[in-house]
Amino acid sequence: MTSPAFSMCVYCGSRPGKDEAFAATAEAVGTWIGRHGGQLVYGGGKSGLMGMVARATREAGGRVVGVIPKALVDRELANELCDELHVVTTMHERKAMMAERSNAFVAIPGGIGTFEELYEIWTWRQLGYHDKPIGILNTQGYYDGMLQFLQQCVGQGFMDEWQMGLVQSGNDHTTLLARLVEEAGLSRQKDALRDVI
Image (cartoon, rainbow, N blue to C red; front, side, top):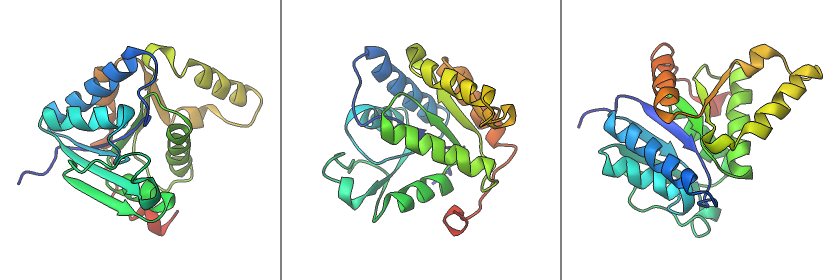
């Protein structure tokens, strides 16, 4: 079996959201990953945007790796159609495995779980635990308020511009994903992240 060209971790909501553009984004991201010979790494659920991105990836010919904690198997409706479905004990294990299995990360619309995953992988990069690219797909300006607040943090001296530079943002999935994959090719770090976090 041919190895995937890249492995993209997608953080997103287990709900669909109110704007149809969010569902369209999840489907577009999954389709892009599949059509480019990639592998999706995600939270392992079949509801909301999580299910949509996984389904679109498979339909476009990509592989799907899901990682879900045992406590969330019923709540997030574990996706049995994943090429690999890993049921782990804790959220810490989930995030470490997702990070290890990925070359790059992108957040699309989601809720508190999506934010937490994004901020943690960003923090790990700041601390030097990995050097893999991170992106925010800002569909319909969903992340405008957050990005504005982060610039306020810089202005108030709690962050620096170099930290902001560790994450890319954009509203066009084709451009952002291509950029992340290209950058990932320059630093294919294979560290066992769970050993250092």
